[in-house]
Length: 197
Image 1 (cartoon, helix red, strand yellow):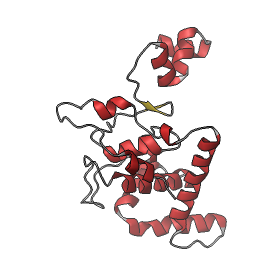
Image 2 (cartoon, rainbow, N blue to C red; image 1 turned 135 degrees about the vertical axis):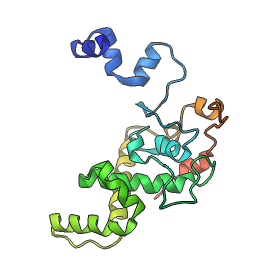
Image 3 (cartoon, helix red, strand yellow; image 1 turned 45 degrees about the horizontal axis):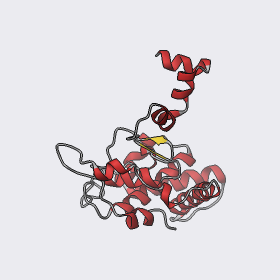
Image 4 (cartoon, rainbow, N blue to C red; image 1 turned 90 degrees about the vertical axis):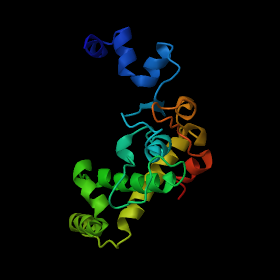
């Protein structure tokens, strides 16, 4: 609590905490900082939830689980979150979907049932039409989501980010999570394919 209070005062420790996990980790000499693009990971370990790991790596914002937390779902019963392949398409779908949810101002939690019932997507399209007066076709959500991600990626590229920034910290690849022994073993080629539009 004292460090958080110091953030408002601009003290050395407050500035450190206020600048986030990457800055704090480097200042403290930590070598295993759970972050991507300076954004700290949530509690979802990418060695178990590998689609979420792809999202952490490729999301324009960095390790943000709200951009596409790839969890098992009744809508996709064949999805295996611990498999080393097949993670990029799931991550890409979730990333464009949640880009739409954020843009339309829908609560993330209220949008989760729509993932299990895709037939309800038409209602989101109807809402967008009602607000804008524009008629949108059945591909509107995907087009909107991918266009948002393209703009965000272009921003990152203009800021100097490359595919090298679309990676998890090396310890997730090398250090097994116990007791499962799982590592993040999704190939770089698959990671790079996630947001190729």
